[in-house]
Image (tube, rainbow, N blue to C red; front, side, top):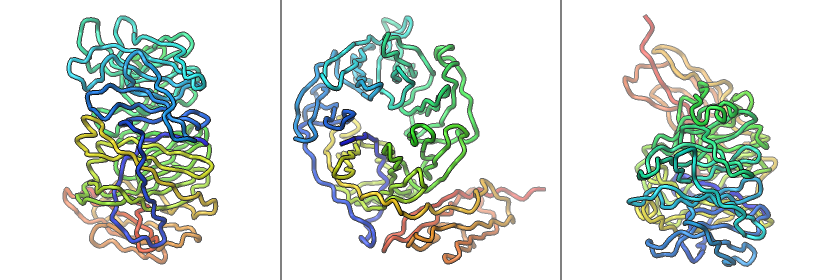
Amino acid sequence: MFIRVLLLVVFAAGAAPAGALEVLELQPVDFGATVTQIVASQDGSRLFLIARDVDPSSTYRLLVWDVPTWKLVKEIALPAPPYGMAWCEGKLVVSCPTARPNTLRAVPGGTIAIIDPVTLAIQSQIAGKTGKRIATPLAVLRYAPKGKAVLSVRRTAEGEDVGEDAITVELDLKSGALTPLTRRHTVHAAFLEDRILQQHFPGSPAGAIEHYSLAECRKAKGTARPVVADIWNADYSPLRMVHGGAAFVSTHAWYETTLFDAKTLAKTWSVCGQIIDVIEPASLVVMAEYVYPDAPEVKDSCHLIGIDAKSSRTAWRARLKLPQPLRYGVYRWRPPPTALVTGTDGDHLLMAFGDVEAMEVARDFRWYRARLPAKRADGPALTVFDKTPPTQLVVGEKLELKVVKDRSETGALVLQSGPPGVAFDAETGKLAWTAADMGRAKQDIVIGLTDGDVVIPVLRFPLHVAAPRR
């Protein structure tokens, strides 16, 4: 069995009739504790849980859960309560801050523990220190250069309270040395040969992707400047590698998920939806469908989509019934933890729900589990535009596009949203519009595909109309 852990941003969709969609049922899962993060042993036989007792005043612990028997087998004693963890070079790297960041009178400092996955013993403990400053270790990043781990830390001068000087550091797993890489706080970064693609989060769940030279970052020790390409001038989140690092996927703000070539940074495809995570080595991108950001409705289901990143084909679509009604915007800003478990009996989604305010303060989660659909090797190719839509139109300018749909795609094309006057032929896929003055209003064109009685958005682009040139 092989297990991947992911962070899910719930995009709620209407309670649609089942139609041709497979309906996924969530079943309750009891870990006997409040679990805030899950990673798995690389052979898939164990889950490592950051958890605490139901009592909110209890401290966080690192628990080991046996998958075949579904029982707790061990608690690993740590120098301080765990905050975050990730696999690096076959070892579990766990951040143990002296006090959690949202705790009043938090004491700066902490330890980074390196754990052997077989013996479950702590192989080494590294004190948080960068130069003359105390480093409070926080998030452990999913990707790192060979022989290293990468963490987000807060640096504080000795004798001061925990400050807001959040930086990204590189940990040498042999020497234990901590080297500042960038002056930005992040939880998503990719390392491509001598490059760093890092998402900068200025207090938002999404941030601009900045491009750094890894050699320059090491040399400058946190003062190197990013090399920013045009595509990074907007918010993306999260960032996930596919094809063994040859490509990566990320979601642009609220709207579409794009596959980028890692070397050229060229876009391979873009589809409506929010990325959940990827399953490797199958390069299966799991997404939740796009829903308008300002949707006020409370929903009781969401649509999930699996895309084969190698073939650019739809592997499956499904409707996930939620255990409680959700409001879209709430979970966009406060995403619950989730785990994707892949084994001999298929892929399973572990998903946490709870009172929103309780999750923000006490992380009071209740876990559920659902089996995902089987991957279709012969699924339809992704529906795309015949050319890249323009980013801006001028009043009176004509827009002409064609939606290209795979012959094996059984769903019918539908114009779900567009400005007054836009013409769309569902049979030929041709779309035409003469740009009109919309004032300060902005409207998107959204194309959907029917799946039974359900319409799933697949293509979208925003319309920006400028005044006529003089």
